[in-house]
Length: 356
Image (tube, rainbow, N blue to C red; front, top):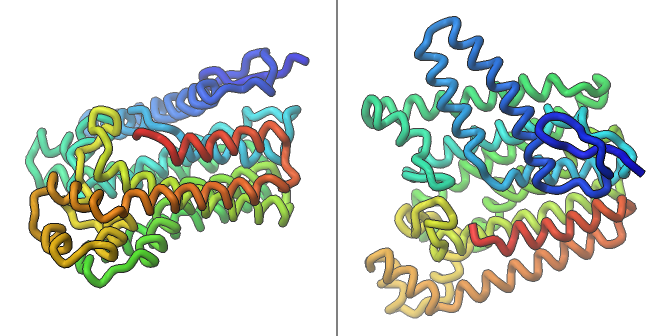
């Protein structure tokens, strides 16, 4: 049966059940490129400098990445919409999630003082190279703000009934609030890491990462389908919370042991900033007095070695395994389309066993 799959921001006639991740990504990025071109043109008419500013924002949005949030939202929708439904109307809503994600990344990089993202200079570093540190920080804040406004504008263009869009918007707003709440707790933890705990680090992971990477995008997709199914919503909630936490736990490990050539980010950023991640909180809990002393005063390279010697990375690997198992168990009995279930099972592995 010939249906459609996404290609660029168009649909081409090949079986929809064979929709690839690459096809979905091309569709979302095509939608973003078209939307951003019109926004840049509008700002160019005010002042050429604004057009240049908007082009920098566009380059950050389209610089690559895993596109996990629109992917989870798509399969959340597909789980209840089924293989016969056309995904074309979803594209603005899926693109909005990437604009929101760019907002979060730009601000997060500025707060963390990170120099690179996706193998390229971060927004504040791009602007700093032009007019100095203060300008770089100020311009990065504005780029993040602009991306968040653009996300609102693009979401509003989603051609679904007003009642459906209102339900989608409710999830979108909750997603943003939880991400900002988690980010605040993340920043707060850096002020006194010794007073933090593994449980509080996991609370940060649940809000800063899990809710806006997996849980709410899935529920957002469910709302886009115009479906109110408490059983599916609960399965998505459990899967989203557990796989989302596992995603952040993997990120904690990559933040210390990841290869910058693969992750696109500097090594040991979390050790440098003293971010109280679950990994580092576990290391402190398991450390001997001598190891604690080194965690407080050794070089970054030695700190990474000490963390490994405490056994904390192995504990985190087990936490990831337990959470993924719990999420897949919740999904197993959910009344969703079998292909969507298979895709979400694969995504759980992709998101939590990744090298970057």
